[in-house]
Image (cartoon, rainbow, N blue to C red; front, side, top):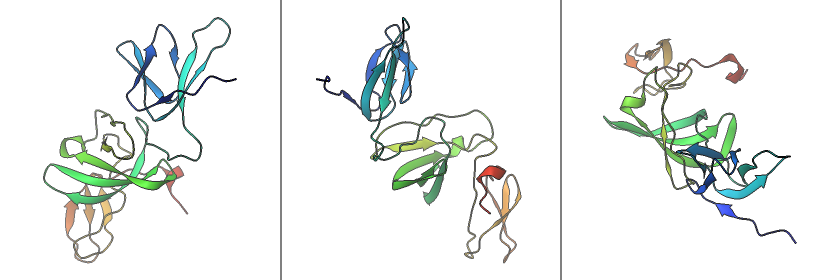
Amino acid sequence: MAPPARYCIPGERLCSTEEATAGSGTYTRHGFIFSSLAGCLERKSEDNELPVVSVVRDSESQLLPNVGAVVTCKVCSINSRFAKVHILYVGSTPLKSTFRGTIRREDIRATEKDKISLGDAQSNYLLSTAENELGVVVARSEAGVQMVPISWCEMQCPRTHTKEFRKVARVQPQFLQT
């Protein structure tokens, strides 16, 4: 009879890095291995090496954004300090339900990568546009027309010719749909 499965939640300390090696669904910090998602703990050992500790999810369950994942969001509201967004895609995979995210004003820059905070469906993800490839892909002007990027930091309304500052994404060719 198989031992009962141990379920983990994001941020749960699983073991020391001296006892095992971090696998998928985990991360290391201060000499310990932590779960980065909700799922079932899996421990695999090969030969005389340290076992690999992973956290796996049911294939039917909701996909969660990982640290460093590229996500596609829709901006819901903006104020002077941050933008609130709904995360719609992780990579090219559409999500079954949206996640909430926040992009702080200071995280909209071209250098110094930021972290994404992890959690479950109720969490608020902290996002960044720190890489050149990341930023605004589609924007609408106050006139309701889709804006056109004219530089890496400006978009223009084709109807009114007004220019607005945006950190424009440099979308890679493999992500463009034809």
